[in-house]
Image (tube, rainbow, N blue to C red):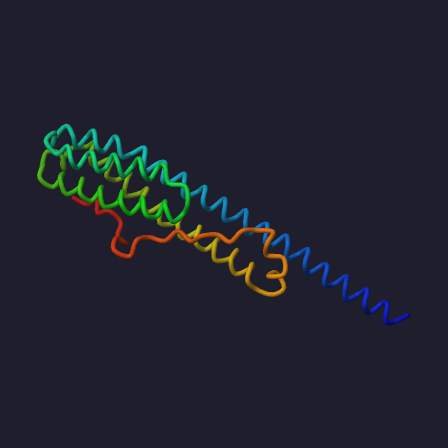
Length: 181
């Protein structure tokens, strides 16, 4: 009789651990989704600032059409990216295009003194910092989920969630666009 009780207790404890582990996996998966949503919020803010920035610079540098087209195209590609890897690549292209835009503005002292341009520059800089923070939070959440999925005993039930992909930047272009003047 005592053997049945021991086996029952072992099964009860194992079942309890798996239930707690299942809940931990689901919670971590939801946290990854929430973290990705935070990145999307900040990226949308960035995308919304870019047309205003282009319009402001265009008023001073109308002959720089190629630069404006590159920024516009990079913005469109970033908006349409669907996976963390594609988003990271698109964001790197957008950062490079923004660097070109800011390089153009260096040639126009009146533009650098424009209150509208300075305000947009400050907003973009603040947004870039928020994006960096959101990326870090997302990657921390991904690391937590993927670690839970690969450690015992949760690796026994890891298929209840999908592994998440880190948001990684391009090795060649790791810097944030420089927005100081």
